[in-house]
Image (cartoon, rainbow, N blue to C red):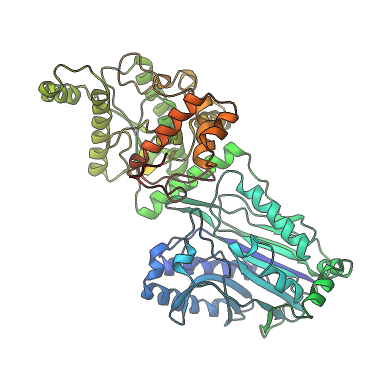
Length: 577
């Protein structure tokens, strides 16, 4: 029985920390060798971190990436290792994978398909590769590809399969959105079956600015079955036994490869590279496969994404503590709970800033939340500042009815308090606005939008409630007070104010926003979904006119298919509606 012991090193890297990332790679090579692996793979651009963005436009950065990668060769003694890095040759940059064998840098694979949509700008930075190598190590043949290369049928996977590769090692830094792990696995199963090849899909894990990578690396056999899967949102070395004889046997029964080769005049389009070492593929029969970690359900998956993204953004940016303004409402409660899970209760500061319009129950709920979470709790009333500002503006405001200006004044005073605390303590302020509010502009510039990281920026309000209930269920007690979950949402900036005074109920609003923002549906198409035309037109108008606010918002993690920011780029000054 020919089996290959494969290690997939699902690691969390930091963009630009070339030496630190390289040390992680070395440590995992040691672990893979100890686990008896023949081959170990590392994520896309593991040496540089992903995405390096305009760092790639600096030649010194690209040259340093290549130099640090070269220093990893000796650590591969006794192994084959595949390591993602930025390569620099012929006066251009490549998204590449170094292939090491027994202490030598033998070859380099260059990514052929460069994504240029959504959050990706790889055409801006890299030249596409054109060569499809198939690596031979004794009687083992395998290919290497990078991320987008496998999302499309055809090259390079077809060429390596036609040339006889039994395994494709596909290294990735594939950003997360809700349900993406299942989407990926459906695609990978199709590729494995269509080309009769084992697909080892290795993903990065960790947060990087507005992206989070979910891991969930997976190995599919040639029948499209999951034989091993790593955990989501956690670092791991996944070790799996790949049955190579099963691939060979399956191909005997499938004529498609022969037919395709004949159509190509028996030319696969691949080139063979001998690694100069034999892998120990002939082993006593053993159970093939590896550990199959279960995929999470939606609420746990999104919560885990928010926690990891927050932890990594703070840690990688040098922040030890976080400040959250606690209103007694659902959004600030969820942000505070995420922060506690991310960095620990002892490093989270909750701040209640009541005004003359704050209800007693909101003040009590904020205090109860802080006690439940075990975080430090400060109460800093804004009434003195509010009264002073109203007096200062009295002449200007005279004769007019109180309105938005007076309401937003309170939000800005709260933002001032939080940012002053941030300056004093060095802690980062986590903003509490959700996607529904960001979409419609139901937020105050330099007020509740003030802060360094927007945890819920891409989380619709209805999902915020679901997350809160899920986290309470996991805690086995009402971590987030029940009244916070059941009372009508309100900004409490005027007497008796409720969100529904300004917005449709969130159960109605969120599906309209998803259709318009994420799916680019027209007004007519959304009306055809069963919504009232006047309501749809008003929501679309709110979204369009508030692009200028969103451009000034703090960065926040992407968890939907289309987030504001890198995913959705619209002009600020534009007439088209």
